[in-house]
Length: 72
Image 1: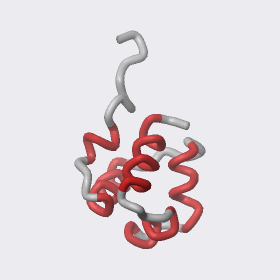
Image 2: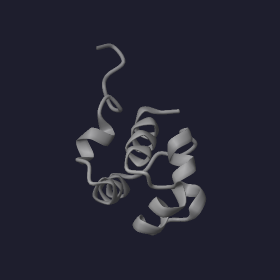
Image 3: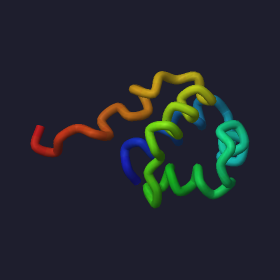
Image 4: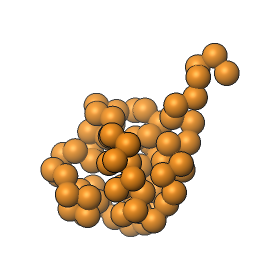
């Protein structure tokens, strides 16, 4: 699981929203959220912004530690 996926899952669960509910809110297929959370797929920046709006969390929080240089 990638960091973005972990963060999406964590914030979604904190809000008490199911994967299906989040998918409906951002208008993607039901399995898409599962793919993001498991790391099978990485959301685009536009999708991250939609997810952040739906979960009422800053996009930076979802991306926190996701794009850090591994050498750091």
